[in-house]
Image 1 (cartoon, rainbow, N blue to C red):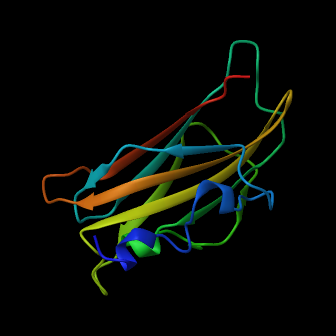
Image 2: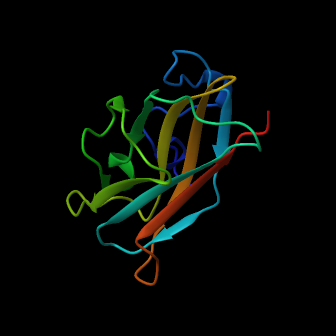
Length: 148
């Protein structure tokens, strides 16, 4: 692996050096399994699972930031913090496949997301290795289960 390939994904370093949406190290860093994506437009779907009796705080927004450009995925406002007030789960985030410049065959997508629940808040970051594969899918599912 080349030196530059080790750091694909907009300054993604070691978990202790990562800054989430709160300005601190995320409460959870999820290292998702490799996703094999077909070179086409698609959807990133975020699934949140809360423990029994726990609910999302009514009226509280979800905030997220996606670094998909290095992976060849173009999202609206890529790299910016986005606030969504009226949302449903799973959260669907459409993307377009970037054709030029062509992304590396093996790369990484990073998603930071913060949400509030009835006992506090959660800041989570997903790191997803992406491999471009003509036989791949166009839907990328990310899962997070709140345990506390």
